[in-house]
Length: 357
Image (cartoon, rainbow, N blue to C red):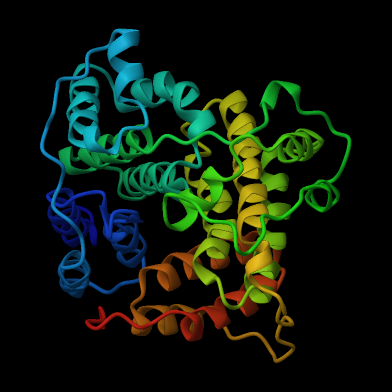
């Protein structure tokens, strides 16, 4: 078994026995955090980190009714978190009958418009599972189960935003398009909490739809991801009091790179646009919650090793994932905004009680 795979599999197995969320809306980050930590040489202590994190996570929903492949059965279950176990069982059956890439290829276009589901965490969980498979050269059953969980979470929390990819035109740059999209009032209330709740308020927003459709990249999808994550890193630095939504302006777009060898060129391009749509939704939903944005730090940026060490010692799942994504983007672009943004993360999140080191 490849080095580092065994503790990751142990962590994934434990995480898969828990539910998708805690507090009714916060995504279970244990599988994604464990996958990142497995690349940071924490060894067997990875399992301890996972166990500590999972003490917060709710038990899984009981199975309700088998989801069949017919359109009515699928439509009835889509977006229903109470059917989450039914969705896991459905994708487990799909993965038993076909190669995982074929399952992903078949379901990607069906789920793509709902990529904002649970703040993109269904998409993210799937992407981290695929990266683990590629990094370790393994299709271990627990890694296949993780793909079933990622796709299942995506389907169970499916959430569309206004705007249609087919109608998008290259009328503006991404920053220019963002300037046309109004922000929700800070006092706006939703029936749901967290990122999904704020995004719910955009459901019928025609100005939002027009704004997102006014941008369609004229560059390759990797270049688009690079540009979005640069904007996202600066936004994270500025929006100091709402770190959770703004970390996803880097982690979500950057995660598409984990799938670069496994999706078709068409799927990669369309996914990059739908991640832009989510990206715009975070600005629209949370921008007004920071009345006085902070300045980007001007001190010399920390080293890559120092940032990795700080993330591991801190232990928070968002710090770990954000640091990983920032370092990925820095390695590609050389823009030290990613190092500066990552250096801010530990102070903006509470440390996990039991650290992996």
